[in-house]
Amino acid sequence: MIGMQYKITLPSDYNMDIIRNRVKENGFKTDGFRGLNFKMYIITEKGKNGNLHNSYAPLYLWNDSNGMNRFIFEGSFNNILESFGWQKINIGIPLTVEMKKELLLRSDFLLEISGSINETNTLSNLMFDPMGVDEQTALGKVLIYDPDKWGYSQFYLFESRPMLNDKLQGATIYEILHISKGN
Image 1 (cartoon, rainbow, N blue to C red):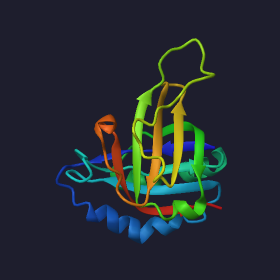
Image 2: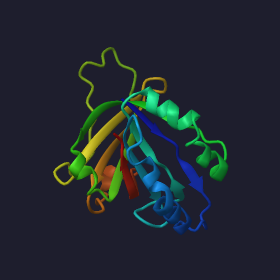
Image 3: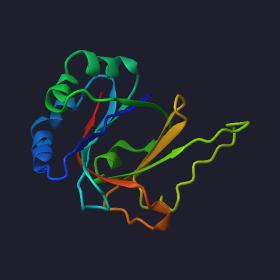
């Protein structure tokens, strides 16, 4: 599996209904995409859910590189390039994927906690602290790491907006507009 995300920061006065309509009109195009495990069309909106800016930041989980390569190089990613310009794509390796597909589609919010993996003598017992996340109400979680930068992102799916406590300051709450499941 391969995790993939590009985060497009939009102007603070950007009308986010433009993104909502874009997803409403086009989100179905990745439903059943070959090689895709799932794609979450997610946004942040300045002043909502503790977010400081507007963004469009789709998150993908690919079953293998073939589907991802087809998406990037056979025309689908061109829609992003034409609408938003050149984008850096963050790639990572899933370490944990715990979710049931039927729960995935009930999710309306995604919580992201990012961090660094510090230099150590062993990675055998490395623990990723959920930092106060109520895992009982989470519908699923995905942990993706990048060994090139030694960073990670923990993603938790929720049906309703998760509450941020002091331990979760700096976390990002995304609104999920659509979820495509691959084949």
